[in-house]
Length: 533
Ligand SMILES: O=P(O)(O)OC[C@H]1O[C@H](O)[C@H](O)[C@@H](O)[C@@H]1O
Image (cartoon, rainbow, N blue to C red):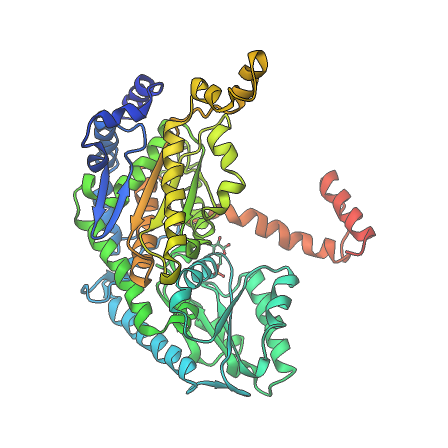
């Protein structure tokens, strides 16, 4: 199928895809609706034939069977021998799901109730610090134990009515110090979020926070909670089991904010709003399971991604939310997509037959327009763009500003597609220049156009919509991974750096020499030591 797709691409690569809109039904035909969400992929070079070929990839890879196996709790994370069941965390009324013959749902729902009771106690003051009602919550975690909660807390800022929420992730002491400086230890709750409870950054920051707290309060551990799969390790750290919220190894780190890892979000917005967030995700799960492929938003989002990355060969994709509340969505998706599908070996241990998943990057619009869109419009590489835009913001008295935001979003996708040819460019400067200078100046003002983009449009970013959007991307990653034959649920590629950092620690501390290290590494240690390392 890859060959058929490539030859189809060769056939259509040079056409202006704008001409596809001569078919008056294109915008509708090349869009997917799910409830009040719309995914428009008509501003791409995908035509009916291309779409048919892409759809065949799903059958060839057995995506439907693999999807059902995931939801059922089969151990599809084969390199780690684990089920992949983040969907169980939002299966609020969806019936039993068995892993190793045991229904996991009673445990999931019980933990959710416990989280909610604790979150409400923190919010009401029933759970207090040693100096009174909790004013600040500090979530210490990294990767999947940070990016989801950070992204969601920012995204749901209009619903934030709990204590102030802070996030510490980096082992750089600048991070933890800056956060703790803003907090009063007597009224701060520290949440240590780590699936494994061994991650060096998180454990180091947690010990720093505990030492900071013990300078002021007599029982620092009493103001700590833990979110982890490792109950023994949370106990060793001194955290009372009543404030430990556990989960199982079938929840991957970057898929974990729906459960205990979302506690900081729940404290910020309250249990009801958090459940609405879960329900939104559950709706997307149901849609993904039931909808025909052409009407299936995650599947079509994935196929558009595959078309641009593996078929057209565009190595990156930009995620451009015209919704400032989603300012950390690109960073969140970087982990979700790149840690999941950034692999060169297929499930059966063979070298991947295609390129792995793309580089994902982005910033909110309109900010990006004044920074990197220059390259998107006129650079020599094509960057498929994925726009997100809401019909309505949360600042109703500033709706005119929201309208300006939307106009910018739609204008960008139009500009990317249409471009501006040399004739038009000449017309723009004909009154200022003439002759050779006119030609030269005009050339700089040409926009090649024919650059693809998609737009995800929705009414408003409320908790349920955020749940739907994030679940949409999760399932997109699943489909892309399944088509590429990748295990999207392990992350062996992060291990080597961790091992070498541990080995280098005695060297940077001056307890061991850099003998045996390569010249560059040894030279850098020497240089940094000279200046105070
Ligand atoms: O939650 P933790 O066990 O502390 O893990 C935090 C993060 O660290 C690892 O390096 C993985 O690459 C991530 O997938 C994970 O989310």
